[in-house]
Length: 367
Image (cartoon, rainbow, N blue to C red; front, side, top):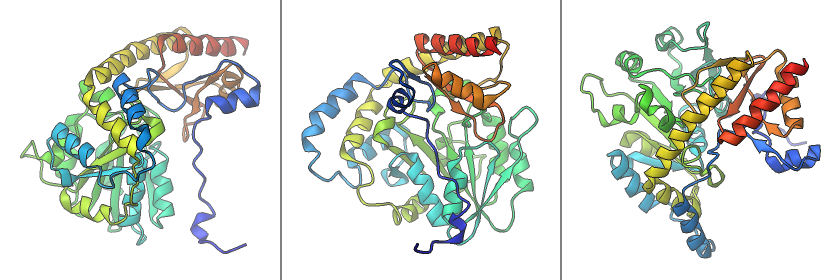
């Protein structure tokens, strides 16, 4: 076999949530609901579907490599300049770009325990060193603890806010205090994939720190990641974006693959951005579904972590067994990696949440 770098030998391949069709095929089930990958259970905007149908005749052409129309729309939407935006095949690809640019020289990246698993994966694949910062006893995050872990090799700090899988989010006041003391030679990556679900609950809009709305916050090296995969319902098309200062975007563009976002994804994202009524509807239904799951878990006497996202992390006696038993009953959830016996359930429609709670109750009562 051809040789490959030693650092790849200990890297675990990322395992996504199981698809519905795979579970049906493996277990011989006819009805399966997937509450595993934090997808929007209401799909996407109807105008998006119509636009994709209209543009399907153009898939024989290469996409616009610079995503001109989507770039202009996002520039207006977020009040930033067009050259402050970079696009990715999901925000996940932008994380990969960050690793290749800033960590390939063996530099160090920091993140809290229980953060999105891709941060560690990308850091190590890039040849960097990944270090984790411990959580508090209640699984919350103390941003000031980061300063105890910064070394002369630290170049990137990843913070997903809200955090997947715990659902925890740091508030605006905490962030602004933290930013004032952040060293100028470090890139702060604010991953805000779930921002739309959290913005009405005191969670800061990281783009404001790039716009310099608050003059009391000194200018820092920050990139904010957003995605169309969650509240906009475009997970299957894989499109996300990052916003930062021009210098950071310019260097990231050097490693961006040509035509990395496809034509239908650009068209869909542009239409999705226009339909903020659908976004508001999705957030409102998520809040209702979240309460439904909270109340159901309380009735079952199951411990859970209050969430700022579109998912809830809960604890059971034997997480692996309960995960498999739920799947046999046609409900796909997700192990909460890094947290023993915790599972994560995406918030679905009312009927899906009801089925999940019923099946979980059956498993618990049988024990």
